[in-house]
Image 1 (spheres, rainbow, N blue to C red):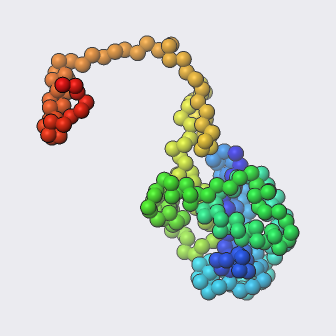
Image 2 (cartoon, helix red, strand yellow):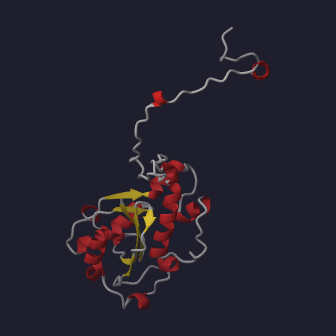
Image 3 (cartoon, rainbow, N blue to C red):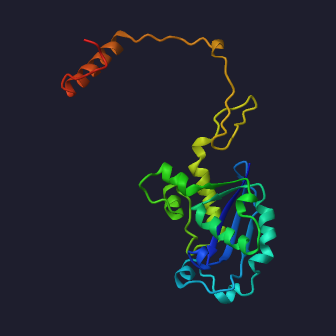
Length: 236
């Protein structure tokens, strides 16, 4: 499976209010291996960033004034993303901004170009309910080194997200090993396990020794005492 870890930086928070993209970062992964085939684009938003947004990404109006406008890079971006699964942290935000840019160009929404969209924020909320699940919080929790993240950057954040995703989903790899000794790694929801004929195996039956039986009875008696005689696992 081809996945693109995707992140953007913007002039502000509201695409519908006229805020624009200023940076796009795409990190490619194929079959859970980073390929190094990444895409990084700075975009001239044709407007200034809000002060709070500028504090986040540090991309000044002067710096961006020499960069291509979105119309000039749209086809390059769509070609790179074509057919892939987009993996995004808080997907509605980034998807909303990309779709707003595409709408200005009278192009279909991004979901018409990609295979699917996976939101890692929703994944994290399911796995860690009630906890902070920002990208920084997940990096700390999953031991991903984000010490170089002094400012937000789309490519850097996409790279961090790829590392976070691997750790979020590492328990979902297939544990089946073929005769050659290699393991089959599948995506979540695609685990395929071959049937094994258990009749081929003769399993030994080990009987507990007298000492083990007495030790077991002692533990049950202690549990019964601790529960005030309310044990339910043994019939009277």
